[in-house]
Length: 546
Image 1 (cartoon, rainbow, N blue to C red):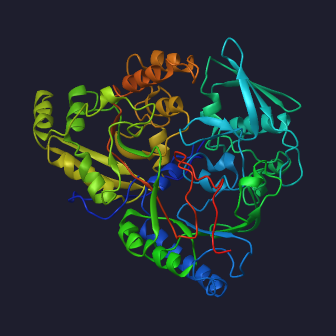
Image 2 (cartoon, one colour; image 1 turned 90 degrees about the vertical axis):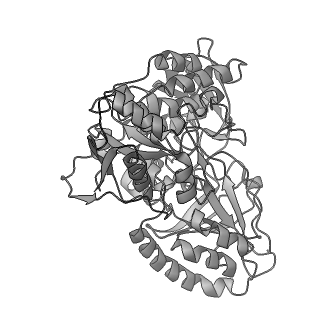
Image 3 (cartoon, rainbow, N blue to C red; image 1 turned 180 degrees about the vertical axis):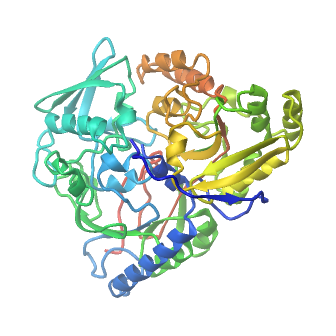
């Protein structure tokens, strides 16, 4: 749990017109970090780091105009990745399931991973099967695997990993594992006993929730946090906290034959405006990209691409507090939101308007619920009048963790229908948000590989993203139970899943707004990446110019 912290000073922002500068929105802060554009302070810090890294690498890359690996033909290939999400924590139990898991997956493997269809496929586990009742699943591990400290990857190691994620005091993952009642291990077999029938477990225990560390190294979690030891495709050889990590290929990784990158140089990204020039000169060959820089990167001849994902931002509402205890006020907010404005101003047109926590075309997306509450400010005003409110009667604080243009758009759109918001920045925002003390906020999520986990996190009575706990929409619990009881390969699964999404969207606690892109850029030396939703998978990727 988040420890108690001193009550912070708050910053109050007067009503303004929505700006056009780009920014979009357990630890929840890590999910916001993924959805957000970098703050000015982060830009300045990153710029200093970037300059220093560029200086140290300049002599190395100057002879390699293609930005590939080493200057020597046939030499080792090096991925030079500038990331805006450089991990604060390298212990996957602490880091949680926000965007940083993509970087931690360089070091850590999981029981399962996700393919290009979003389906769970083998990773450390070669296969698995459920019992007849559906309340127990047995994973069979690949033989002969070991962590990079020499410890065996066996059933006992997986049991330890799950139990540590459930019980470690600073775990960000315990809330994701509530279906697991008990874990037993025998040799290379791991038996996961469940508190309920739940066919989602193979989807759940992938990179986002169960990246596995060496149990020996994890005996000292504080040391592990900056000295990661996993069984993934790479091994950390040097780590400068918050700044730089150097990794080399792990020859003992189970799929090492399909890892064609020899070394990784991971650096904290400098200011967004310098990333493009860094890619042109070969300081980097791969980077996260802000939408504002996409056009410049394309004009520079770089490969700009969107990796599929589950990003979704929302307005979080507490229906236990006035005026949102009146359903007509909630409906008024729903109809006051122009989702296209978020996309145009925050993603430069690269994102998508969304009214669901899933992208259109994904198995959990419910076509019947599309545009259920269309933008209609006249209807919004009429609903407020029906609820007994005149323009200006409703005055609320919109509490957020840091300055975000998204909050100004919300402020402007609600002002247009007669609701006055005062934006308040609270650096310790997570405490009142997760204590369900706020009346109104905004939030963004990167989603989960398990669609049911995404639904329950948003709409369930104990969902961390449900500001209205213990409220849940009628029929949601039964709809989710039906999905859990349905095997993933059953022809009934898509119908059951979409019905659960539809039930969840009845919730008055969230109004979805837009989806920010997972935007990346690389130079021509790096081959295309697998389009695994929300993941960065280096399997089969090659770097030319060797």
